[in-house]
Amino acid sequence: MLKKLQLMIRKRVWFYPALISGLSFILAFGVGWFDLSQVLSSGDGFPTLFLTSVDLAKTILSVIAGSLMTMTTFTFSTTMVVLTTYASQFSPRTVENFLSDDDTMKVLGVFMGGFVYAIITLMFMRNSLGDHLVVSATIGIAFALVCLVQFMVYIQHVGSYIQTHNLIQRIFDEAEENIEAYHGLQKRCERLERLETGDQAFVVRLKSRRYGYIQRIEHEKLAALARSLGCRVVVEKINGQFVTDETPLVVLYFDREMTAEAGEMEKALDYIAIGSEKLEYQNFNFSIQKIVEIALRAISPGINDPNTARHCLKMLGVLVSRLASLEGGYFVYSVGASSTEKTQEPEERNESGGRSGSEEAGVPKGDAVFEAVDFKQELYAGFYQIVHYGRSDVSVMLSLLKALRFVMEKASMENRRAVLSFLEVLWSKLDPALLEGYDRDLLEKERADIQALIALGKQAGSVRL
Image (tube, rainbow, N blue to C red; front, side, top):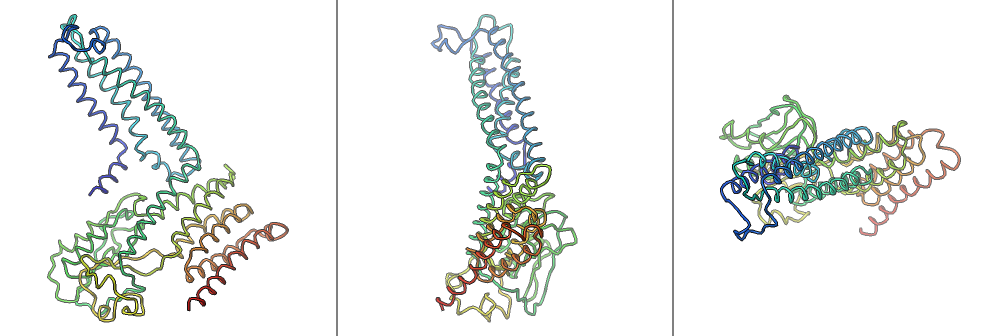
């Protein structure tokens, strides 16, 4: 629930400006009521330093309101310039990285809140107050000083955000966090090399309710639903994939008479969020796509910044290497599994890498099965566009080969073979001009280093045997 709220806040650009403006509105009413109901004078013991006359308060609040409106306009204009730069220089998909940043919207909210406070407080300035002293101007000055500090923070923030390497690092950090979460999810689950459904009494297929991208899958709730229905719930899509209202999204397998109501079964669709755009939450592929697009924009003739592309390739190499130990197939998420089941020895499992034969024959009750990420697809999606558009730039190709070496160093033996297959495809697509002279020597050296790693892996495997 907390994660849902956090995602909602990040997607709502207006949230922080509306929240801070609302709190400022309440503050202005409170201060105005205090000034009207409490007639203060210098002899009341209240510090006179914080009290001003009504005329001076009007002047101060008027100046603050005008100044904050100017600062708000400047902040909005600067934000538009940054968004234009992100869309044109980096990728249209990176615009949300700036808009969804809390600091950006909080600064805009503070400026709007200060303006709201000044205007509402001015409304309480009555000529009937006469020579009475008020405290609203002092609070307005404090608000203005806070806005000034926030303005300096915003300038520093924009200067940092507009730099390419900082943007790439933030995208990298988010992707790495999602990859770690995915590894943690797989460690909690059991793996199936292939899905064995057996002869089931009833099979119910649920189609997506709408078209769009899968934004969030609630694994635990789906497993709990499967347990309550006494069936196996199979999700046939992964996060980030596009589905239509005719796409089979969830399949329920019952190995006995089905007693569940249609409404209970359709609850499975409630735990898979579909939206009109991709989100980075649970979707490291989207972050990888952003880095790829920044690299492609960097090597385009209009920008021609190969060094940025090389940096992107290094980051991509590290990210894909985090996935190099993954195995394909499916993973089974169970709720309330016994400790004996969780600590089952590998010898007790069948040759498919899943559960024991007795469980495979009859589909176990009360678990959810999800398709695992395919490393070969991740490898291809991470590099194939750069191979196509950068094949004539030797510096880009050298960095790409280095990235493949990063992946090779952490890959399992099966995934190393996939890397070698991709390497051969890459080599066949190189510009013929690169396959002569010193360029060829450099490329062949990197290629030999990659090929040597699979030989080391085989030797290590034979030693362990």
